[in-house]
Length: 301
Length: 301
Image (cartoon, rainbow over all chains, first blue to last red; front, side, top):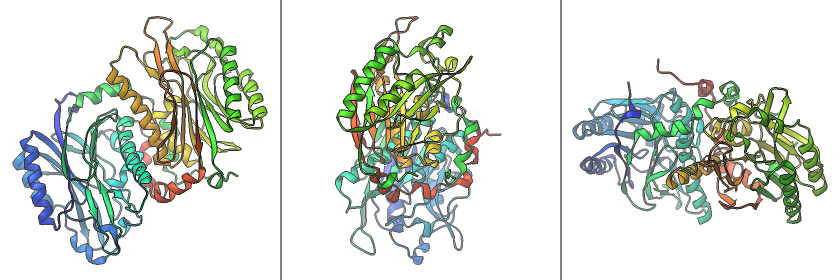
């Protein structure tokens, strides 16, 4: 049983990286970062979404299913070994082959003893120009349950999930003590600067709001750098800005816009307890009125 | 039927005020502000929560039920007359006496023809030191339905509701085109400056996030000024900062921290349509997984 609310403060880190080529190149860099983090006394590390390579969903290409791997599989083996060796809890991201013709965008958690503590399959799947994820990923059929680790119950969600307060709430109601988002989001380079600024700030705002409404810290690790489209000259400029927020949504640490970084902050679990006492939102939810949240639209007639 | 998404831009205003004494004094000031707004071409005006007097919920006093009035009643009559005369849609706030022993914190909407277009009874009721609302207000027994007006369907909620994404979502699913929050929130003067800053920013963040997750503008009108407690020297310093945000949560206008102000901005309904096309969150909600949002807590065993 977790005793998160009385746990001493601990250091967490986000590994914000550019894509460096194939899985071996990226995992080699991640290994360096994990060692660097452990050397700084970090105990929890979050990697970005689909960190083993470029963001391949810019196009729909059946050949790219070759990139998928099982869970457990090579990536969880390797990262589990490092987690155990370094005594880190690691939240990672895998393009999961569950069966022939059935793939997921899956977050995996390696506990500090090296064990695969649990997985979460991305539930909300985007499909926008440059983000053709509905082609690759079946929506997760899980239940928004946090993953028990030596650092508490981790409410792990993935990227597009971050826009849905429902996902954050269901995780929190199930006892999540941190919300964690591996993500890969960026600008369309053809958008105007003002639109780009609004998008970044909206992304930060919605996730900070999950911290506020649920009274817990939020950790969001985004990739960085420009990745050209295989089909045209556009591509995506991933906006970095990975951040760690406290339980009032306050920014504790934030990464740069344009380069790789190890973003670290100290998380104090006792703050969540204090904040939930002064802002007792869970006391006051009007659950008898919430049934229609399960409707697609509350049509007029 | 509303055709909000093709409506031309219009000007909206928030009347951020200090409490000036009794209802007559406050309504006289509000009348001045409505005339000022109309003179500036404003078409929608939002007043702060319980604008007819000081925030009386700092203490529990049965005598204060004398302040309540029916709806429709004197305040809706007076404001309805002004709305009709000036051609304004007005969102106001009344301490409603529904029956002996049954009172609500009720938002009322007067349409630009002077008609009482609808009411909303605050659903989520706080009870914190200095905010003893559970003593005065029965939680609304409505259904989170927007109010149809000549400026579209207004998703009117009240103050503490603003911390609950469920309320914003239910209003949006029912077709709300704007979210509107009359509110009265402030600092405990004894809190440290850093805590005060976190609270203000959290309040702004959670409401801006409702704009983001639902793709619509949010208007929040807060009171301002220090109101001493009738029982001790503490009291509440209402933090002002009334704001209007666009459908990506971007701040369009914001009031000062320490004085009364008429806060105005232009709202462009067509922006909501554009934003919902690039961020199609309503397309992707996983409604088949949301049933447990109606649970108090998703207990472990």
